[in-house]
Length: 247
Image (cartoon, rainbow, N blue to C red; front, side, top):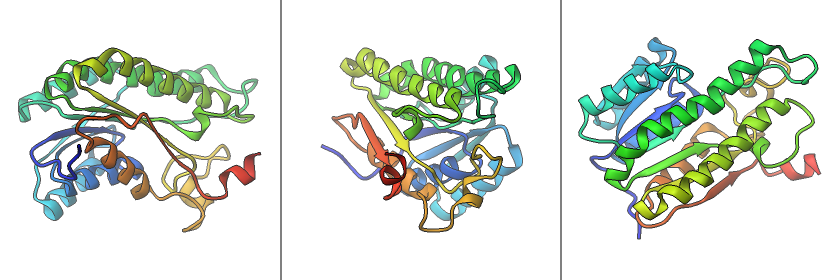
C-alpha cells in the first residue's frame, strides 16, 4: 500500500539550502509535508523556506545546522520537536567532496569529508530513530554512484558513500521490524552546486539534458517516502550514458 500524500507529516532535510536538498523540500511540501530545512547557510535557507510557504501553504522551520557538530544535530531535533509533534521523514542529504588523489589530499580535506558524509549521517540518524519509529516513518540516505563502483578519482569521497550505503542497510536490519522504512538514493552526476574534482560545479560542467536534475532526485525521494508498508531498498538514478562512459 502507498499514498501519494504526505499531508500533516513532518520531514527534516539536511543540505536544504540548494540543489537536491532544496528541490526535495519543495517536492515534499508539494505532497503536503511540513518541512524542516537544515544547512549552514541561513540566508539561503530562509529564501527557500519563504518560497515553499508561499507556493504550497505548508509550515516550514529553518534551523541553521552544521551536521558535523553533534550539539548542532541535537538542537535541530529539539527545535523540530518543539515546532511539530513528531518526525516522520529524515532525508540525510548533506554531503561534500574535497580534493581527489589520496597522495595529495590534506588531512583537513579528509576530515571535512568524513565529518560531513559519515559523522553527520550517524549523528542525525541516531537522534532521529526514536521519533521516526514512533511514526513508522522513513529514513532516506543520499548515496551515490561513487558508493557502488570502484573509483579512480576522489576515492575518499567514494569510500564515504560506500559507508553510507552499508550503514543504511544495516540500520534497516535493526529498525525494519519496527515499521521504519529505509531507502538509499544513488544518483550519478546531478546539475547542482556540488563540486566536480576540478573545482567547477556540476551545474557548470553539464548542460541541461546532459545530467540528472535535482528535481529528478527529489521525485525519487518523495516516491520512497510515500511507501506505507514497504521499503525501496535502493534507487539508482544515472544519466543515460553513464555506463557507456565508465565501462
